[in-house]
Length: 248
Image (cartoon, rainbow, N blue to C red; front, top):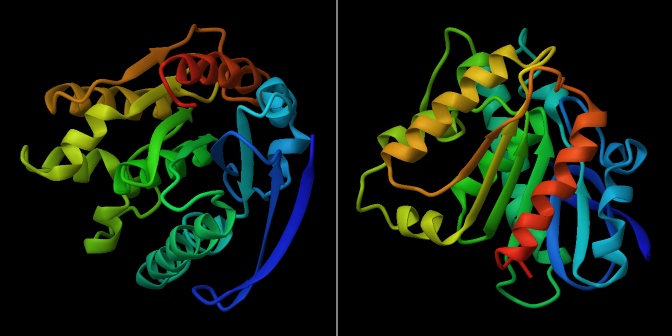
């Protein structure tokens, strides 16, 4: 498996940003780190290992991006407008700088995935840009911005709150038809540390059903905790479904 480390200056963020790529061929996967995590966590916690068969066979290549949650979503004592504006700069970095740099061909679409807050980012990017992401695999996520911005809301927090902006999306919005052509896999356990995420997943599930958007929303058992050993089981399970359903 070819592994490459990259460090480039981001015009959107006015700083250097890092990422790693695994493999050179196949359907591209953008993996988001968990809360306050880094681009190397996916490898360190064994998530690259569970995808290695697809990577080594040339069916997948994985891009692990870096995050700035500590300055945005996790920074609860910071100015909320500054925090969400900084998140938008990171969003621009991912969409306008990182993805064009890692595409093999123009217009290539991505699978987005992540665990915990990485699942929120994966879903948020997917639902904001289904023209760029054709598949989402979100594991143990929370899908509304108010959890990180209690008592504060504006147009930017709304557009980064999938439960809310999907609920308000008009039936004739062009994204609705795109969602229906994509592959959506949302999973949550019912064990330790999953309570709030379980409720948020149920709400997102309800919104998707009300909008007529097909999605595989899977609730795992009461022994399934919010932790890496379970995510290492879930990711290949859903990736196999995605690959069989046409993400290749």
